[in-house]
Amino acid sequence: MVDALDRRDARALTALYADDAEYTVVNRNNPPSKRLVLRGRSAVAAMYEDMCGREMTHALSDIVIGKGSVAYVTTCRYPDGCVVVGINLATLRDGLITREFSVDCWDE
Image 1 (cartoon, rainbow, N blue to C red):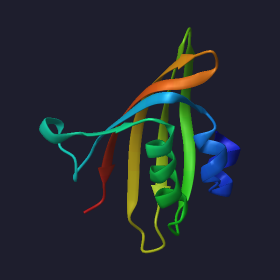
Image 2 (image 1 turned 90 degrees about the vertical axis):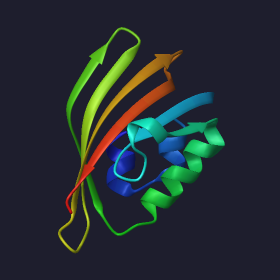
Image 3 (image 1 turned 180 degrees about the vertical axis):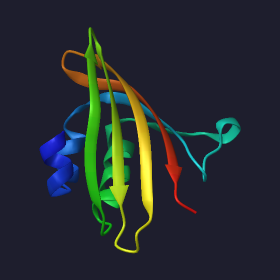
Image 4 (image 1 turned 120 degrees about the horizontal axis):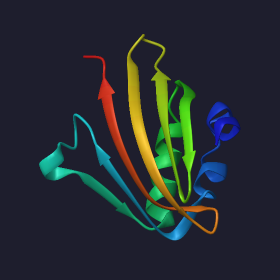
């Protein structure tokens, strides 16, 4: 995942998800009462294609791996100086992500 984010490789990132993956996002555009829920690998692929198509850098840190799960922090920087920090928790099955929950905070 780290290498795929560094390369902004949407295809490699999408390959980490199961066909029936569910990815939930809570952020400034998707508050807790109206969270964004992406269902299926194709929906996750569209998200990564959009994200990887933007001019920004990504860094992963604080990676914690447990039995059947992984948690990590992402820090994204846009050229204008805006920083986005995300905390993600993912559930794994057969080495693929089946569920992921992401909370993002943006500079305003």
